Length: 247
Ligand code: PXP
Image 1 (cartoon, helix red, strand yellow):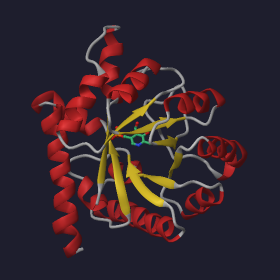
Image 2 (cartoon, helix red, strand yellow):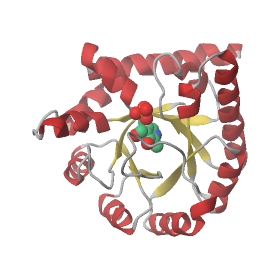
Image 3 (tube, protein in one colour):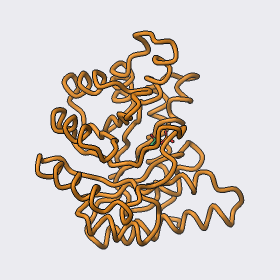
Image 4 (cartoon, helix red, strand yellow):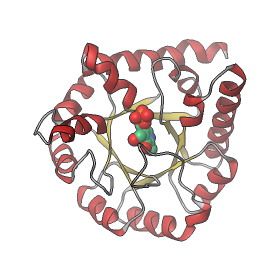
């Protein structure tokens, strides 16, 4: 079973661009669920550039669907997560000037703060995922600090040009997924996945969940969010059912 988490940050990006009350992330969450989203994913950034605290609170209170809260390893965010109690948290690196999350979490380089954050969240009953590059050392470090899950960063695969580099990046993801699964962690993936590149990742049997935002929200401009989510679900299902058997 491959789950789809729909990241609705960019609905809030549009709202914040005009300082209006619309489009509303909660309306987007409803539409995404109708299209087959298993979960709503939101990144509450330190600079609050798109999703606001109130969006997370409202969606958590109103919708009976899994929530994946992406956040940085800070005490303020841990306190917020404990108030909201999302289904799981995904810890991501954050730099104010970046356009989007640029790389995976440097778990080995920030071992203490990552472990402190994981311990606090797990003590509160929240399962924790770490957003990491498809790199053996990062997977081992994630396991050592006690992560329940890893979300493998698919950005390098999505940006790769030419068959050789696409294949190289894909194989790195496959190897990372295999290692993480063998260590007993659940495996998610995301970043930069779209309707054309999702198939290889969706076909990997180790991967249980994809978190996808930008491509779905962009497609929604033309066909609506419910239909855009449904198309992505269909692409994922096709990859799992058909492609996987022919790999
Ligand atoms: N997963 C994580 C951890 C992310 O930070 C993002 C981007 O916010 C996504 C998934 C979704 O990426 P995209 O918007 O490129 O689909």
